[in-house]
Length: 260
Image (cartoon, rainbow, N blue to C red):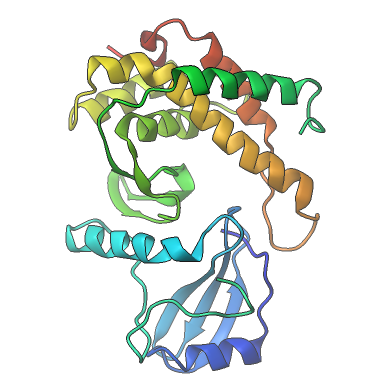
């Protein structure tokens, strides 16, 4: 979440009239995150999150994301649900929206990774709908119990093990860029208590984790170089994911993630 697109009060008041939320009382931008513009909106019927989908979200994909959240909610997963407009729609338009400069040699390093992925990326592993962005700020807990998930805007049909690899990147590294083996082992054991990984999935984890790290490094790098400083946007440093890429590239065995 962040704020890339400014919204004025008159625009927002007029926009909300299309939805059964009552009158606008107040609103403010939400600075956390990097993908879309988000606002906390207080209306006469309650509080809502308004999301303006920015550059990396294709308007044509929105029905899939919203439908997925509706399906998960019906299955008991706590996640955001869209507010349906008076005309029965859920998507509107507001405010017209539906590297080597960081580290020397990075471009060549990335090119080599892409070449390796093109030759060796696993394609015959179990797959289905994955979240693809399960970072700690998208997952909520009450005590030790999962209470909700948000930001399904990268959800897609892809390899289940890729989702696991993304979680290793997002949850199991420390601030000094070191991999926490205890966290890795706990995450993998917890996942396998529900769905055991197949042998080929285990073997593919280092490459999947490297690909996931590259994906997040590149989007962070783009934002780092193109988003102006200031305003309600949290720019994330891409260098931590450069370190993750290199860590995964050096992995010799999936056991180094704590996999048993």
